[in-house]
Image 1: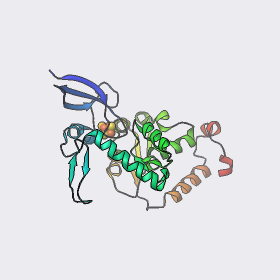
Image 2: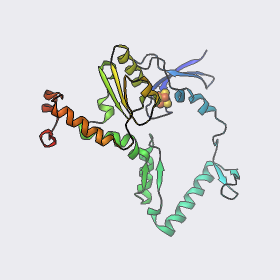
Image 3: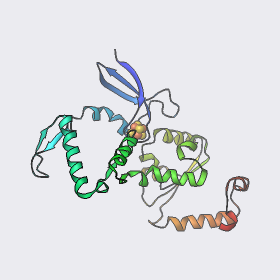
Length: 251
Ligand code: SF4
């Protein structure tokens, strides 16, 4: 009889809630958590591939040390102790010759990121980086600037929107199960979808209105939208009075 385990998908940063069936310590089935509104059993293709990732024999299964020329594909198996000592020896050598700042650590941000950062501080290098500047970090910075909160703290109530404008946000191909289900619910209730992107994507094919702007002209489009909205007084004045600073300067 399979055991039911509720967990979180780690195949991307969205972290969808999942329901997993496990038998004899082996994962047999993964699906979206049927009890979570918006998810209701759904999972993207990448999330469903979680079992393949677990059983992928082509991924390194243990530490290996290169013994041939770079690119020759010649490796030998090592124990964790040997691999750690080997790495520590190399790091010590580099630091003694070039200083601690010559060591750079780049990684995909994860739950252990604080350990990586602490390690870098301990060896005396400030050179830590992740992909955040191009991804969630910049989204959060923009959200904080606009609202004082991160986007995760605010959330978007797609299901109850009347008109959704997606600006370069190819949501139907970007793995957000809950958001997509809620957006489809809104569209079923009659919400309109406007999509702006130089590329004709799946999201473009589902939109009521699609603006295929030329690459690099988004700023011009923004100025044009702002101009028309302000000139014709189309904005929500009560909201703006309460939440927006500097509108007079903009006008
Ligand atoms: S969007 Fe897909 S890959 Fe990402 S957490 Fe959800 S199920 Fe997993």
